[in-house]
Image (cartoon, rainbow, N blue to C red; front, top):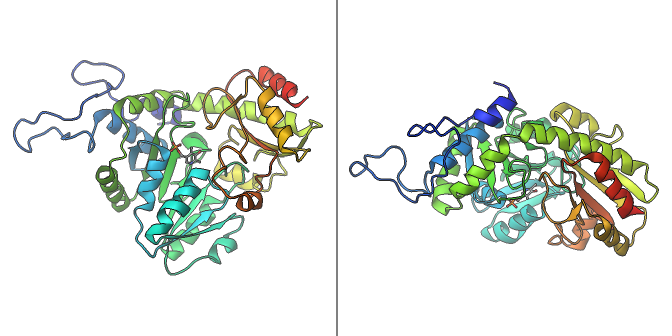
Length: 379
Ligand SMILES: *Cc1c(COP(=O)(O)O)cnc(C)c1O
């Protein structure tokens, strides 16, 4: 079946006991057994919950994968994936990375003896040069945050395969509607479902998908052993959000395209970062591996004064100044002080996150109003 149909139906059957068309919120911690061990597949709700089961099956379907797993947050999903590794293992990661992922790699997992190298991944050679016998994982985030660089997933999959490493792709910025990492050779696709998947800025959630049975078994073991599982209400909200993922993404993409073109011609604006531009360095790869260019746009002011960026963020109204992205409402952020505040200034500058870089999560409001709002904020 096609994506839109799977978004609405995959993993969800009418409730067998009542016919309820929506998967109920199974707000329970345990399940009555007919006798010791004689249960219906559900024993204890950290291990299994039917609302979560529905979400996990849905995510697997949307990612064209065999298995899905849901977590209490995107970071909890990422945490589980890194815990597949052992002390001494080495990871090659995208350098222009979500700040929280950079933090868990460098501040949490380094002290357990896992080592990380960061690279822009703008060519396969760059990654091959960092390979070691101990390299067990290649970690890709594309489009990147906040520079919206594009990394060639298929090329990274080829390197991972030939070196015996797992390829993990953080697919949060694209969503499963725009990009299918598993089809491109990734072993695991992971999301902060807090963003486009949930889509309404009303929950914190994480999901992952894989078609590798051993990886799935190991990740499910970690999910249950470490216990960072989502509650059933959050699974319900994620499932509800997903039902409109395809139509939301279409509007995010078309609004972002209009706004990127508006910004490109604005006298106060310098570089505009959006993979839909023909002269964007990743444009050809984006056309190949994505179905559209996404709802995120970053830009730099011509001015390099931090106060000027702060002024834009204060003056915009529809574009609300807030962390996060991927909701139906438009948000404006200042990576240097907000999402990337936990990355040291020199590291930040290396990846292009300068003082007047501004990031937009373009919502699904009317584009005329969004452009008027930016016009006022930039005046
Ligand atoms: C938000 C985000 C995360 C972390 O997810 P949470 O749900 O906030 O824990 C990871 N990766 C990317 C790309 C994100 O945007």
